[in-house]
Length: 614
Image (cartoon, rainbow, N blue to C red; front, side, top):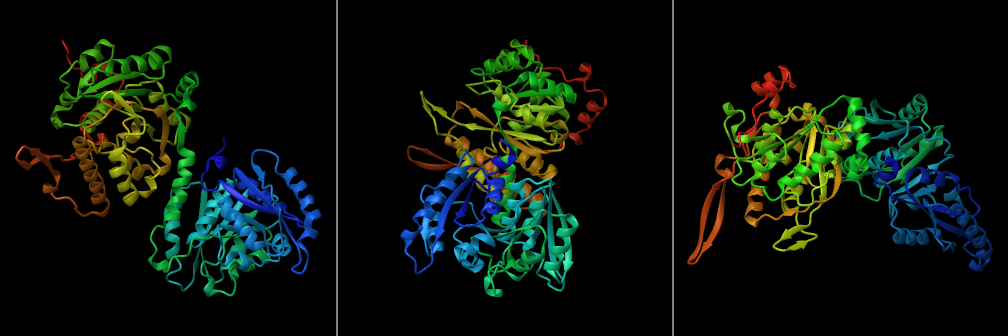
């Protein structure tokens, strides 16, 4: 399936087929844009004529629709509309089909239907596009943008076409101090879209500038928004669109969204539509299935071609029930049978059970993170173990999976590694999965993810909306390129996943992050109190990132103490526990790490000694 089909922003387009008209332009563009095209046949009769006189035309149109509707992409509605007033009838079809876009031919179909641009654009029942054809080539697309909802729709359509060249033209009006304000939302999005070539023009004649740029870029298609504010112009189309339609030699698509323009562009911040455009595109292109990488021979060949080494680090604390099976399953498939992994190490957090003994017996090095880098002290928490795992591992790619996975499968590892071997621009991969949780002796198929949904995702949507498409930001299965991970700060505790995700985004951009569906993960549930502490740590982490971004303090030291409510016979009381998400610096700033890497990472004699388990 190609990217255009995956791109969720345009799934269904409604394309009328009007009797007696040339419908080719709208139909061809619809097929290029969306995986599903719905055809609706329309026979228009004179106001004073009998509708029964349209029976023969309706039969002819149904025959044409059966011919056009063959195949998986195009579906023709069985009922042909025979009417003297087609617009209300078409609006009822729009309510039933709920298309993402209605496409109409600007000259042929509007004329045949007895409609004007004002009729369909003044109060659009859905997003609408008017095509002035013919549509011959779609290799070079120009999208003039100033900002606002229709500009976002224009850019969305341009991206769906996936042309060889996509040029966005930001137009600023001379002498208008507010002309740049509506563009700010789109500008933020375009920073993460290298496939869009952005240029700016300062002008006092917007239409002339568009016409000149269309000729200069040899555009096959120009996509532009209709007037954002009909009350300020004589037509809903707008004077700029009217002039471009009349004079530009390329095909033109004028679009109008059903979303209203903001009351004041000067006050508009980054709009939900602009962020949605970016997140939708990222989600479509950077979301993978673990099964895509099940061919281990192919993965090993990609690894060999790229000359990279891969490490798997397993953080653990009292996981004697599951750690042995996790190690054996992964080691047998990805080291013994196929040399995908170069090393597996256990990073233990001073377990009091047999976790370390089991891991050593399975044949992998074991480290106690509290004993590593003693000059920097020892802290509690998974984040501390992950940070120090960078010090003891060698690989160019480092992956982490939790050791409490009951239904362990090699896909938990090769699914994380696969996207980075497939695409060298990807720096960081997060796993996601369905999370049935075992509570007592029962399996709750839909449970879990409470901290994710009640804390992490709301915070991300509020402060880092570009990351809102990450399905499970707190999953314990993820990995990245060492060159990226060593530049990230690590919080010591529960906030480490959130911290890494934000740092990778701020350092490398959204396109450097991918996510992979690992199908299903079975693990043990945690108590509500433990989840409350986790939430507290995650909130601290996000606040700390915001402090750095805005260069002001939000969290006083007293806020790092959590008051836990206890109850015993006789009443309630408070218990105080410090839950401070302390931060470790990027590993690349740690002198011992730098010296070790410079001294030869393959020299085992320079590596820290594994823990003595005798």
